[in-house]
Length: 218
Image 1 (tube, rainbow, N blue to C red):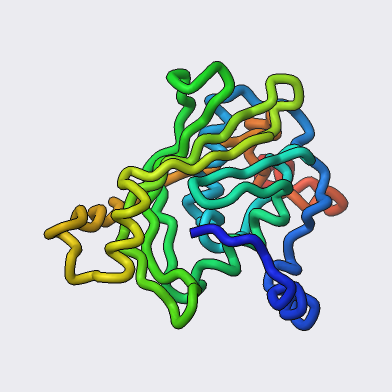
Image 2: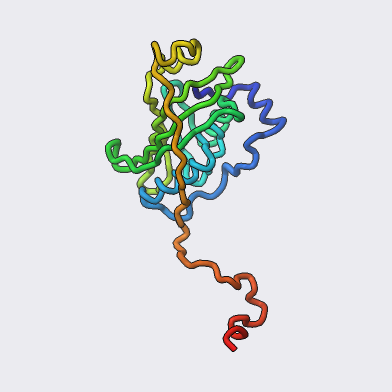
């Protein structure tokens, strides 16, 4: 369901940039994370931001030479990817329900796979309702920089099933597969990646004032 941005979309972008709040030139991660930690960080970020459909990416995890592929399109750069998904998915109805994000050694030594459920509408023509299905997003992490340099999407159903279900929804569950079940809610904490486990003091921010602790000790 990915489409490349066209000239008309570029004109709309100049009028009002829906992703203008994202700094696509932000500095990258200050330190390389191990794969398990990076997978947990991506899980938390994606669960909150659903950037597979919203385009609300965090560029700090992506290399400058990032490349995306799915069965329909190939493109370069995390900004092009973000604008592409924002444009193609209806922002009022589309959801990326994150099921899990885990290191996937079956695909290689530096691979992370996010499993998620796509639903909502694609902004194609008058709008096409998407039968919910599961997507497997494979991230390849550069071993030197620790940044994602490649992303590929795989689907749990064939492309003809997706298209046929969108065009002829009465065939869903009969000729085509049934919709993917809803995603169970999870609690997904954001890992601490700054290396500090110190909890903030009750009196943080009051360093210039008298020593309250000594008062209470009297």
